[in-house]
Amino acid sequence: MAEEKLDPRIIRTKEAIQTVFKQMVCELPYEKITVKAITEAARINRNTFYLHYNCVDDVLAEIQAKHSSEYSAIVSGIDQLKETGKLVRAFFEYMEAQDDFFKRVTCDSRFDYIRERMQNRVTKQAAESRPLKGIEQSVRNILLTFNNCVVLLYRQWVADGRKIPMEEMIELATTLLEKGMKGYAK
Image (cartoon, rainbow, N blue to C red):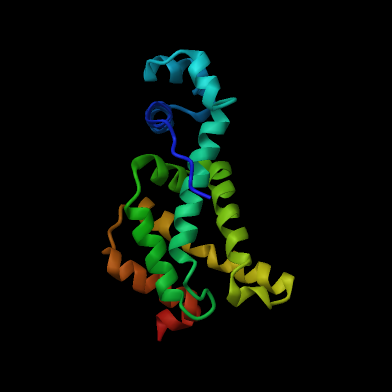
């Protein structure tokens, strides 16, 4: 079955809505973002917005789903139990390639509830990966939670102004995740 092509007008409209939404997230508290504000800034009417989304949260959900799918596709071939360095590198490189919106949602604690939804999606997909599938559920949960430490390391690196060069940060994060504090202290 051939993939259905989207009308270019639909693509442009959704892109306009998402672009405005992302700009607003970078400038305003999330709760201040309204359909009215989005439609005015995107120069579309409310009915057009409602053809594509039911509410502001739906715009966010679509953006989250896109990022979660993109990242999951990138790391899908990485063995989470044996290739920590590749996983850390993939995460840092993906994050650094993203726009201000995505970085803000990931690093600003006021957006923890948004970031956690994305992280949960990725974690759920990772839980179904081949290396983890045969592991008992409670152990798998701990392993997945530990893997999510890379997000905290990235957030701290950003909060500190990225003073450590990225290559060194990837090495440090890999060492910490593979060997813990003793691995760093050697």
